[in-house]
Image 1 (cartoon, protein in one colour):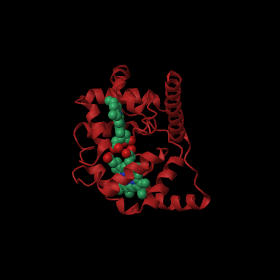
Image 2: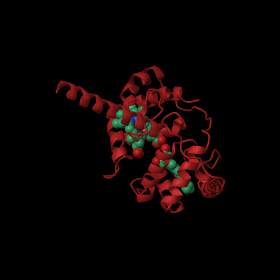
Image 3: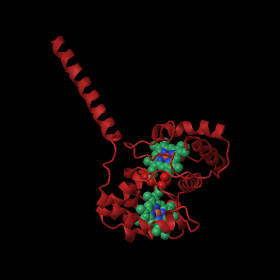
Image 4: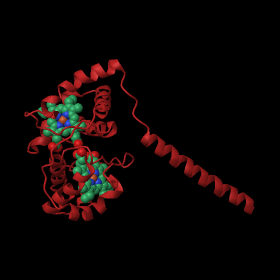
Length: 217
Ligand code: HEC
Ligand code: HEC
């Protein structure tokens, strides 16, 4: 009886360990690379995004190069379904919403997302000023979801914070804080993030970004 109990304990433990390894493995395994044909197709599709997503002067949106495919896909789906980007007075978000006719079918969304992930992240100038020591203290509450070094967490659908420009991340924090992102009743991950800010003031948001800058190249 005791032996049996021990055995079953062992197997549940064993099962837990195995599933954990499997989860970790699937979370870490690299995205399949694009075939040469897919790359050509993706480049052509991404061309229409560059009017807003390049480092050119005309840029009106963030540089998305190097974002993980799962996150890019998740956001493109939100813009496609109207969970993000359909409120005209939310100007930058609405601008991206107005581009949703460029990624209508799931195949295009998949292709674009995998292509975005394959692009090397770009260096950028840091423009936000804040107290990174204070930011480090405030960042403790972000670690569970975004990781100690802003590496993100695929299982929690929390994006990495070590890739994008600081002005964009600050802009998004401000949006979450004032209810201009994560406002849609079907935007579950957006709502989680908005709740995590829990009334932080604007100076703290800048301090947080000053700390997040230290994760970036
Ligand atoms: C008319 C300008 C415009 C075009 C065209 C456009 N975008 Fe955007 N995009 C934006 C803006 C502005 C934002 C930031 C939205 C915000 O501030 O909430 C954005 C946000 C995004 C995000 C979310 C980034 C994040 O961190 O959440 C992704 C992904 C994205 N765009 C991909 C694309 C792709 C792929 C295309 C082409 C199929 C495209 N965009 C076309 C302006 C544009
Ligand atoms: C409960 C988990 C959770 C916590 C805690 C959390 N976040 Fe997030 N965060 C998310 C999720 C999920 C998203 C993606 C939201 C979406 O899908 O639109 C996100 C998005 C963001 C974004 C937008 C990134 C982009 O590319 O648009 C920033 C910036 C951010 N979080 C910073 C923070 C900071 C700073 C803290 C701590 C004060 C924090 N988060 C705490 C889960 C969390």
